[in-house]
Image 1 (cartoon, rainbow, N blue to C red):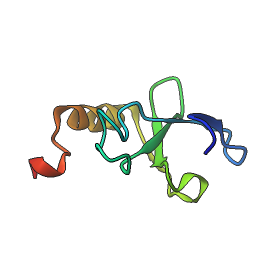
Image 2 (tube, rainbow, N blue to C red; image 1 turned 90 degrees about the vertical axis):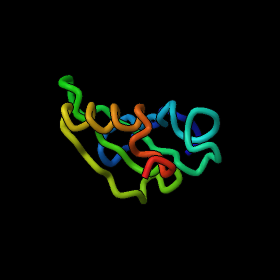
Image 3 (cartoon, one colour; image 1 turned 120 degrees about the vertical axis):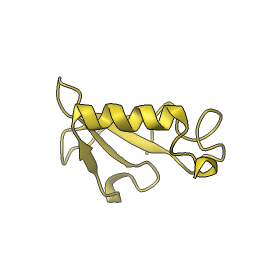
Length: 83
């Protein structure tokens, strides 16, 4: 990917690299990057692996599920050390 804001011509989605992916504030080593796209005005999201880009599987979720996933990630509940 050439930038962090890329339109996917196949789907029309505008993918953005998560601010919390990789580097400081993310996985720490830059390998845990995800791209996120808004699906609708209600907050549904699509998520894919940044390094795989167009070849990545795409996971979609409702606004409620997105908020639950986001809250768990911000709380550290998904950290490998937390398991």
